[in-house]
Length: 353
Ligand code: SAM
Ligand code: SF4
Ligand code: SF4
Image (cartoon, rainbow, N blue to C red; front, side, top):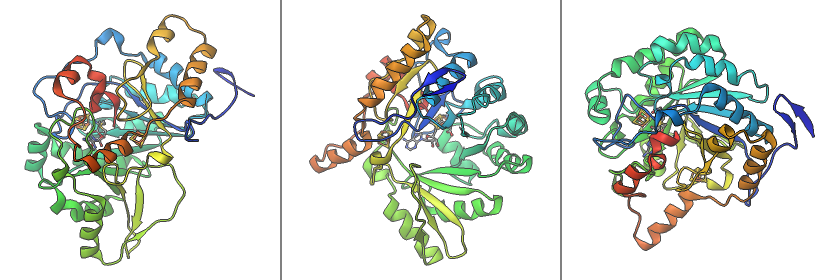
């Protein structure tokens, strides 16, 4: 047993497949200033009621229960996290917890140029910017909003203020951006960022998803080999979702092959939505309400005990189960639109990617 600002705790715990509770994605809002077609393709959305959204204090407290049980990596996400007012204050608060060893942010970059300095000053460790294209008109077509230049300015500003370890996440979609993947690697090289290609996933909210649009890890590697010749995997033991590769000149890039080559066996991630629902898997349809006990005055040990027992019973392997459906030829969109409207928690933009 050790003592922490949140009480005395027993250390790291594992689920039914021996996977530790290691990293937490903390969604700070379900709102977004883009409408990416792989995430929010619909015209209308149901939003989480404002009074249910956790305060920073509540997020700090909940995060503390998770770090007490072994979480060391926290990623702040959304919706678009930079829409949450005064985000640097939350960053500062989370870093008061010494058990948070790695604090990262995933953003679409639209508001980043304005906020990068304040986030850096608050102590944020790392930034990941989603960047699917280098072409402004494609960006407009994909996101149904303007602002591509602001994303690029945001990326430059992140580098300028001194962040290290910048990552650029690109969802690879056939017929949309597969002809730009090499250019994106080159762009990443230019700004000192590692690019990671994400296979298009059939998560909740991806109502336009089809297998034909998935540009697979194998296809990405073929394309990169055609341009650079040798592409070698980087050998590293990691629970990170990306398999990393190195090019002949030493440039590295990653692929997150969730759709064709799921990596559930090493998944230590879970997610809290902005209103305090805890999801054990990106594909989970049921969550555990942590806001209710928190607001009802449950003791830290009661909430920790819930988290501990739920994690110890975890059997989720959503992406692998989706893959198994292919054998029967029935892999279609995960959740139909009516159900998504009834429960916005099922949406990718609510649970943070
Ligand atoms: N709004 C922020 C952003 O876009 O970076 C953070 C939240 S967003 C839900 C997190 C990540 O999920 C983004 O990198 C986005 O590209 C990814 N994403 C959303 N829908 C996806 C899908 N259907 N397949 C693969 N990645 C997806
Ligand atoms: Fe795009 Fe992120 Fe917004 Fe989803 S939450 S629409 S991925 S910017
Ligand atoms: Fe983890 Fe679920 Fe993704 Fe598998 S599908 S890697 S269990 S979040």
